[in-house]
Length: 98
Image 1: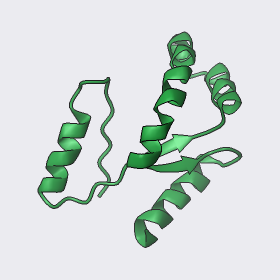
Image 2: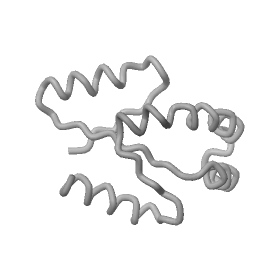
Image 3: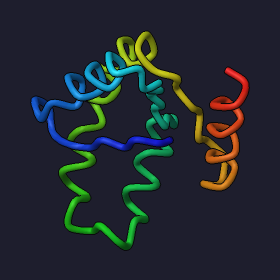
Image 4: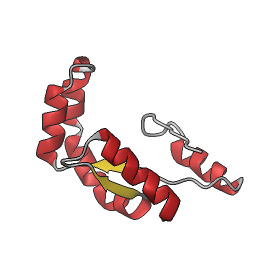
């Protein structure tokens, strides 16, 4: 089972993850990471969410600042030079073998 929760800070994601764990549901947290220049390239070239471009670029420093605790609480997946299919296969492999 995959549970994908997305929302702003304070939306209750951590509380929900904790409650799922308390109910015996195994929850895995994966963070898709890339070097800052790659994030910028992807944001600049995104044709589907152009209206979010400035907001996303302004949050890159916040993401970098959060990386230390994200590394402690999640499996960080390096997405540099990988296709989405490659990343999905890596995560699926981790779910099966980690």
